[in-house]
Image 1 (tube, rainbow, N blue to C red):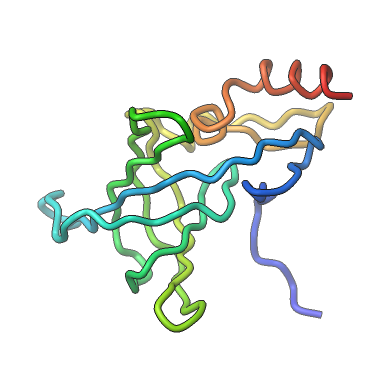
Image 2: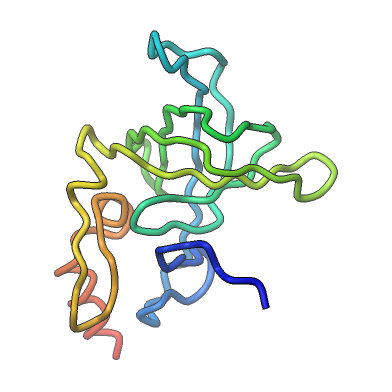
Length: 152
């Protein structure tokens, strides 16, 4: 059996989530590769769609083959929202998934100009890692727990 390398739980954004709250959420992601030294865009914007999200990263599908360590400017659009959530991340892996599609795993470093690393908490009751990434997508942890209690 292959050992799982991930440190964080993945939340599938199109099926039931860890807390059994039905979110039916698919986010549109626009991204650009940025120059590490000059921090300027090296490419036009590309469109992708999220597959899952965690406290520290996300996975998306697009037609663009990215490379490990590529830095990305991301704009994540929640359903029914015209306002993007700005994120900065680094590609951790990218693999082909079909003839024209690639799946890409990205570690998110900043969300709304806030450090993801500095925002991480671990809830002892629900045994879950939470962060600014999940706050931006699902709302704050307290609201998430209240919504869960309402659905139980």
